[in-house]
Length: 279
Image (cartoon, rainbow, N blue to C red):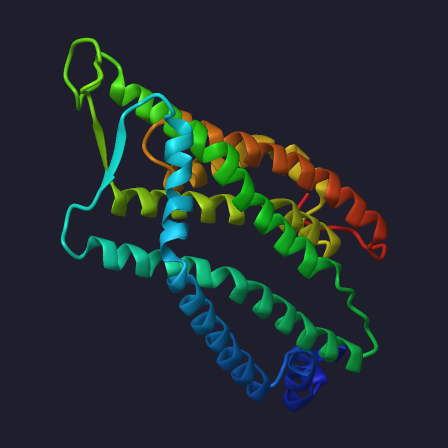
């Protein structure tokens, strides 16, 4: 007879609840989370007010990739509805206000997590939050300076060429003018910025999974084909329905996937020796 069958149900429940108890000891209290949420809301509100004061320069900045991608084309951004300008500025300022709110949340939650782990004798460094924010900002910069101008250069060039479906047939002339809805432009630009910011977190996520022993770097390397399909779907959902823009996002994601494999190998070397799963 299995000796575990003679155990009292209460003792078995206590053993099953032990991991949950350890997790509760590490997680911050409800009061700490409530305080963090209130302070994050205050940071967001103050950042929104500052962004609203500088809404015109921010609008010019968000329009810059379109102008940089079409230096020789007559492109004009327009408001299609009378309330477009107000809601566009609201949306843009909300996105901008999120930028200083994110570092506060990351470092505040990490500080609470460090306190919880320190109470159990474990130490957490400050490297992961800096790496997370650095990768996110790198993704934003890459999208704003490289990816978006390249995407708009293709899209505007296609629309302005002789076979463009908007301008009709014939050679484009100086009178041809491509009018772009400012609302759609802001939505597309911000979606691309968020997609690149999130996509640049891929190596960190892979390194974390490898360090925890959930998925080994060898498993990541063996599943490049499945990863390519998944990243292509991710890029297709967040980009305009044209292959060029999808390609602009997919290539960096695949490069980041390869970087994640190498970071995973480094993380496995530093992790405690245990057989990783997911192979």
